[in-house]
Image (cartoon, rainbow, N blue to C red; front, side, top):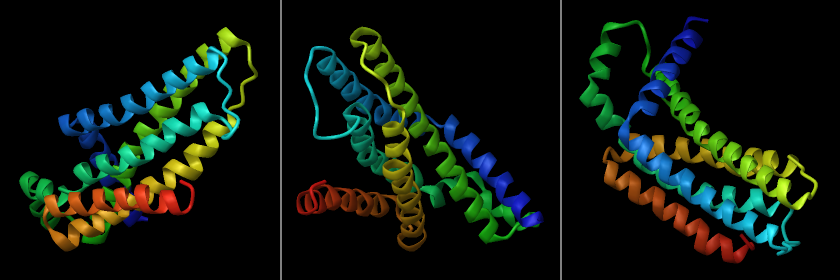
Length: 201
């Protein structure tokens, strides 16, 4: 029970500190703005009579599809330097003086990062829903929230959890932010250009 309390405490602190950093706000803002602009464009096109029949809930699919790749870049830059950030903040000295294990610290930091990044995903969802609500008020078309939740749960969150874990692992092995960032971005590009063509996206 004490271990769970320690993990949650570290996660809460990590999420709070990450949300306050300028790097997270800038990269997260860019990662949110681009899918929102795409969502606005799709909403305008649909309001003008363009019919997208190939994908269910295209207004939800495309913003989350684009954001899933931008999210990888955000994770690479945010999570990739966690060791250097800890050393600058003197985290290891604090851990050495308090009854908390390395495993609890790493798990707490991981959950904190996932929680902070999930905030961006929920922000994309909320803004996309507002855009679609505005479109529906104009066109009068029926609204279904299922595609939005489906793409969030099945497309975005699994990628967030996986890439955060991979980046933490690479950060522990490579110990250099530049190397972690390059490997993470190379992985995202590989998925985009190789698997995207081979398996239809």
